[in-house]
Length: 354
Image (cartoon, rainbow, N blue to C red):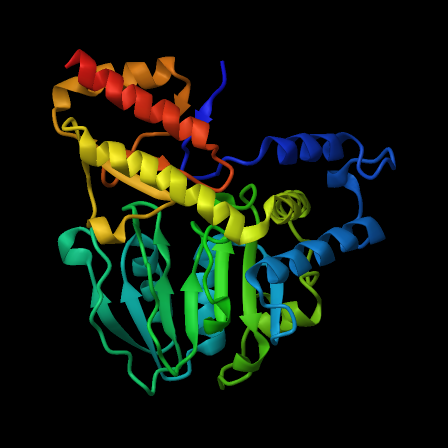
């Protein structure tokens, strides 16, 4: 039976990407060597890294605009620390919209004064704060574009003269934005791009070199830029799969094309949540994420029925995060519209049985 993978991460990947990746593990470039046993310094893999970095900039519309792309270790969690290490000299401003921005704030406090310009913690992170002021003397402003756990997404970003940093781990490459507004973007691959093990960092070079502290080599963006993401052995397989996914997206028509599909998926599922009296959305309607839809049953006694029907339909990964419960349908780029329709059909079947 076909599985419909709504897992929040590691994410669903295109079938053609999985096929190419599995072939490369056995025989990469027809060299009778596995991708995961060749030297990361060999020309075949250097080409992979260069292509992955180039594709990232191309898809984001940042080629020739002073940006560089890196693939680093440590996930977005290391970027919470690394961004502050490299950029926070005196004071930074943070918008707190969920667990991950909360963790980013915790790390940044190690390096300087933190101004939390707004927070939705009191409401259980069920909305995105709209009215807040960013200090003009801040070294940078940090936000999280999409909140995987709670299911909220920033629909717009503030106009500010300070450098803008964004954790885009769970909605990178999913919608059109003016990415040149951002000075630093980072995203763990495992939410919308590839397997766990590598993190995309896109950085505008001219924001670096302005802090007085000595930065350890492994946490220094300038060191990694100088070595073209090869300062230490990169995560060969995750970088390769990320490259394949970026190629798939480009061939599909890029971000503009996938955004239309993502909008269709979100409209279909949220339409059913709002229509069906047995289900209820968790977050503010205007802040609903197109990547992670969170919802609950209005009648808890139907949970077993719903879960059983989901299992019979081949639906996987629908349970909400352990910290909030309920359900969460993650509709990343590679999830087909067909899978969302299957979920909607199950939701309607539950209503018929009730």
